[in-house]
Length: 293
Image 1 (cartoon, rainbow, N blue to C red):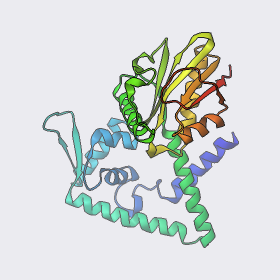
Image 2: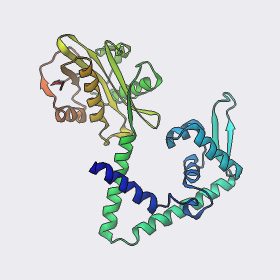
Image 3: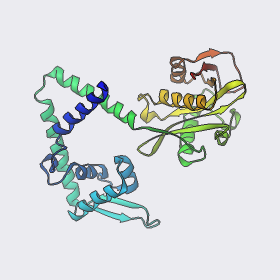
Image 4: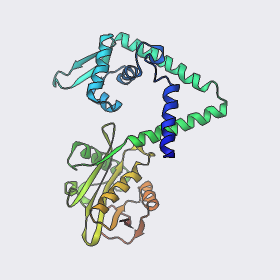
């Protein structure tokens, strides 16, 4: 409860200090929601579906925001020629000018927050803000059990294979690796998890149940764009939890010597190195861990 109280106090202070409570955000004649949409559309325009995912708002609310901006002649929304369901929002000339004004006002607001502080306090505040931003982004990531044949899963696997192909000493050929068909990672034989951030896939991992209470973890990957947020550890924990819920007592995995960060993650998570338990051609290290019940 102390942690929850601190989060709520932080939210109240921030919303008041940056002017979220005002109907006219940054002294402009529009609330924060409309201003944020102008920022996110940007000078090049933005697909409405992407805009909704990026802002994490429902389609009805976003439609109302866009309609208000259209009525003010700041935004135009057009439908794609090939697919009428695809809509793109673009800023008008007036919208671009309003966005520049909002940028200038935002700079002034940020400067007003820093101005009363000492140099040391400014450094502390900026550092703390960067850490809070990283943690808030981490809390936004969703991890779900997914069909390994889904578009999100395929995107993760393709990025994973491309990366290890560049990092492994002898490259990577998917067909040579054990479990070349990820489609088998479905219940009841196993499961495949995908992590998404604002609707975009940013990580994955799967497992297969084996004999004698073992579970075999495979294809764990985190996008470089979100590394440093603790997502690798979270994915690993989620895989272990799902496996334990399915009756597994011990987890096994192997990895390549080129993946030093993965080796460090497994050791920090309680995995101990063991003798090779399979013939994975790309493996140099084999690990095992007893799962908590």
